[in-house]
Image 1 (tube, helix red, strand yellow):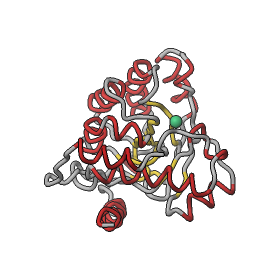
Image 2 (image 1 turned 30 degrees about the vertical axis):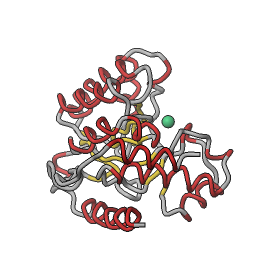
Image 3 (image 1 turned 90 degrees about the vertical axis):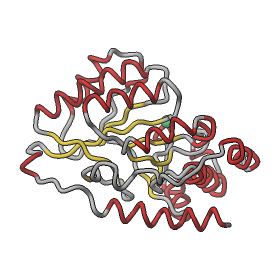
Length: 252
Ligand SMILES: [Zn+2]
């Protein structure tokens, strides 16, 4: 119960933070705003490679985390948050939500939310359904559970074994104001995606685009001031053995 109260407070904090993004003017971004999003982490080495690429380019992104991977790799999840990226929800174990009951859908996203908040990460209550599979019933079930849904509108299929050059070309060619770019930090093709990330940022920045993050409604907003809105509180002490036990007991 205490955890849920804490979680609710953090939601309010997260939402308040997003309403006050860093100052940015359209003059800085004549081509508009795009968002890099990464699904299926956190995974050691893979997510680390994406974070390194984002660090090199000074870009912040939005990460759709899989709950069971947060439970297994809390340190990686914290790395994402501590570097100022936005963390949000990609379900507990990556099911096709269309095959689950309403109750199972709610449980899958709520467990992921608890896993993130248990280590002090202010996750958005924003879900990207695995495989982008969703329908009106899934959407309604998510909303009843207190979550919004977001998909993507630029999908270069970075998981398909194509080169980093091809991934970057597909993104740069299709990018427009409002593009939500779907990439992966949790898949085996992470090296190509990491290399592509640097090229995408360089080329789109040169074309006059700015890189934003997603907010609770799934809209692109400027990243918050460095270290402000998404920083994990210094006071959070993670006893991984205790909370992983707790999470595993909740896993059917
Ligand atoms: Zn996925």
